[in-house]
Length: 258
Image (cartoon, rainbow, N blue to C red):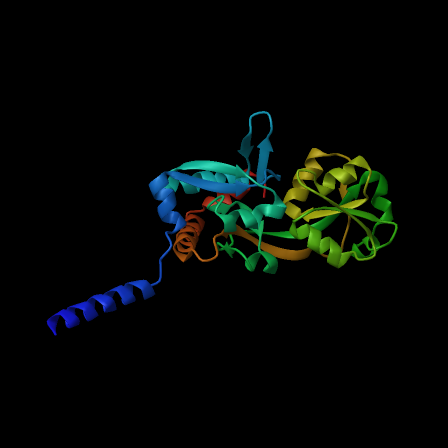
């Protein structure tokens, strides 16, 4: 009888162990044990993340933010090249622990998590000096004889399709960008954030912002994170709150003219 009781207890223990959920290791544990924070970045969003092809190094607002995060974690920082169309997939697949700044969108929220926001953008249209007199406000862009360029996988691509259904839309794939199509004369208009737009206007003297009654799509910006990794999300959010209180984000934005 005692043998049967012991056997039954053993079976119960095994059954309980089998039924217990397997707790996945958080990215935070992996980062601390491995000593490396891996960040996905596109390197083509000036002044947030800009890659120098000669040195394969990055500069920008995002780069400063991630450098500080890695320093506070006490680990090395590794930037993993990605592009906009695979940005979310890279987080989901574990190619990197997080991304730099990305617009918060319902489509991305379906597959990935986000940190708390620390900066926001709004969208404006741009053209070249020789075509500026063709446009006055948003409605003038939505015409069959207007060529609008955008980059595959960006939130701008969806905006362009929604806002300008009657226009002739060209979608280019990174590393090509919509603004390059306009600068080359192959397209007439591109849209981008006020942040990137200000940088492009300074860099290219023949670019002009189209005057509009209001900027569109004010959007908070945040870091993409693994959706189910609440431990890592909690750490990053607490870090953002701390750095906001210390004035870090404001000082970094000022440093990059944001």
